[in-house]
Image (cartoon, rainbow, N blue to C red; front, top):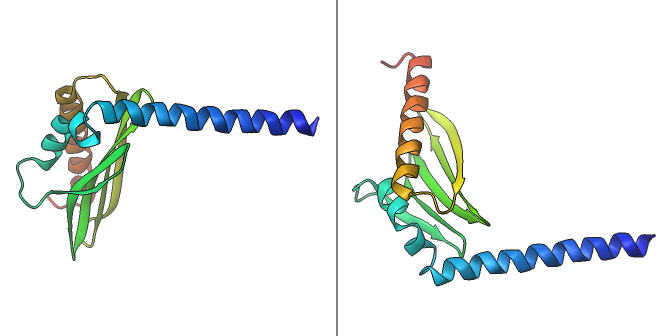
Length: 134
């Protein structure tokens, strides 16, 4: 009985590693993570020279700005057949906030950016209203 359980676990781990390797190879063939998601990266940089690429891995890239008073970071993570976008703010004045989105990896990146920016604006307005900052 234990042999069957162990074999099943080993198979599942092997399958995950195999699939993850296929994903990383796919992204590499697209020119790497920064090339595959170039449009999203540029949207999140927004033309601001202070916004930089902070970290790159085979399947993710972090874009943002950090300072002594806090940080704002967008993460773009390629995971199997989806792209996961996270937004995290750690600040002295407004505190810590975060949002997450998931899209099919072939969805138009301009549409993804539009959805993220729209929902992010709604969230930020709600935060400002709740803190009575207006």
